[in-house]
Image (cartoon, rainbow, N blue to C red):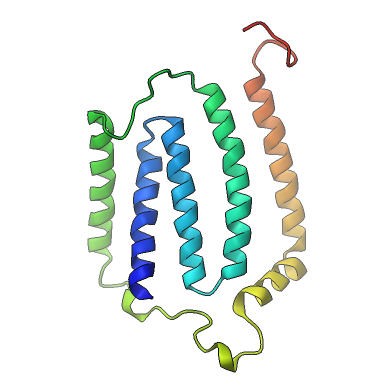
Length: 173
């Protein structure tokens, strides 16, 4: 299981480097989807299956909206890909930075001592992820309301920014 989690973490870093190099919005959205998928895989590996499923569905719904906006605003007939020389330079620079940071902090990380949350599931009455969801709704209910209002406000801000000078849906192209 530790090999699978290490593979997920490696693919997570590669997906985030794909987002950071950002050759075109299409490829950045693809990198975000890959990073979200393997991040949820890491959560499943640590016992948070319900949280991972909720995060994956909500995040991919948001990514669908972001991809639609980025595809509508990016009018590149020939977008840059990850094979272009300048983008390769960014990718190598980011991977080198991650490698140096990993080498610098290697002694403080206890990667070999990872324990899955529900490893002793026969001895527990409740699973870790379901009781965590209950705590989110009981103690964090006000924060969910605040987050819903912030998302609604950000939706209106993005709609206002992308509207342009012409009013309404019917405008000359």
